[in-house]
Length: 363
Image 1 (cartoon, helix red, strand yellow):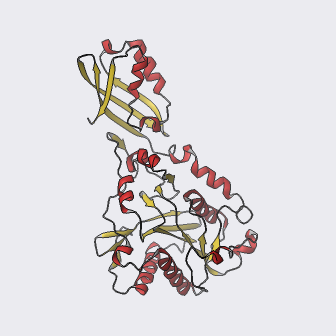
Image 2: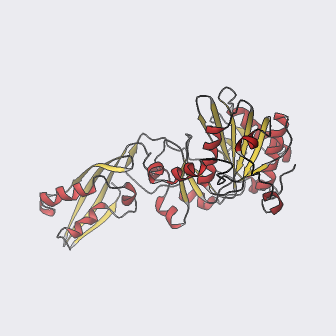
């Protein structure tokens, strides 16, 4: 069955509501499913649920999904290093941490996401990407697309249109990738640019790249057409019917326990607390009456909380007792409170120094 537009309400009535055992046993060899949700946490939870519950020895699965605006960081990344957290809040863009490695990506409805589920033995990242390329070539033979050694897909040998990541379990695995169809490139470039300076971390760092939408190359290449072409090619290669089953990743009857997985992905402890240990070194201009002093602040952050803090300033500016109390009050604080460019030393205004003025600057 050919995939119709997401706007076709008839498709939504086809979502299977049968019990899990019946649902996953309806196809042998391969299954193509598509999420009816655009919520990043629900769709990431869907990946986790399939990975944890489905017997991939019997059937491989292609999962198709799109999200409302969201930034998705890799399992071992630092959100302060990868994106503009203040801008995300201002634009009401969600931040999510996935369970696979790799770099940070921006999602919106102009970005298509594909997840290939197999056993670990059958995991083959390059084969999946070649399938995507073959589908694109079937639509537009003149498209200049190829896969790099880093498993990125480039358009015209210079523009990245797809990034890739994977999770390898003991017996199961999944490989997922993005595909830029008609994403908002202005928002993409804005939110994936961290304004925070002085961070030192061993967290996985994203590799910047020039990007381009397939829509810019050919306006007929919509998300719906591309999704259908990929599904068709997957069906051909796996010798199954070209049928896409819609699925609701919030359906507890079909997917027992998925709500808990979705909630976990939204917690502060997962999104921020899983950040690898890092340090922050920043400088401040402290003004008191007519005097100006450069103040250096150094912090060690573990699990997203301040573990150690040192503020380098003269004793006459802040008595030792108040200094110790200030530093003590910062230990254990959540790092996001310090990521708003309102430096922690602004607490000094409440320590008997009404004339203190502080301004953060680059070291």
